Image: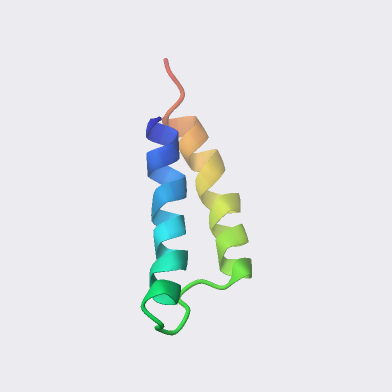
Length: 50
């Protein structure tokens, strides 16, 4: 659950909020892919139980 909240919710929010309020896009699809490539392994290491 912590993994879902730490990764998917902020990225989805940064992607959807500008669309809902008709603002310019903050993240393009390539930015989202890059974020997942960097954040997913880092969170997997940090959130792994000891």
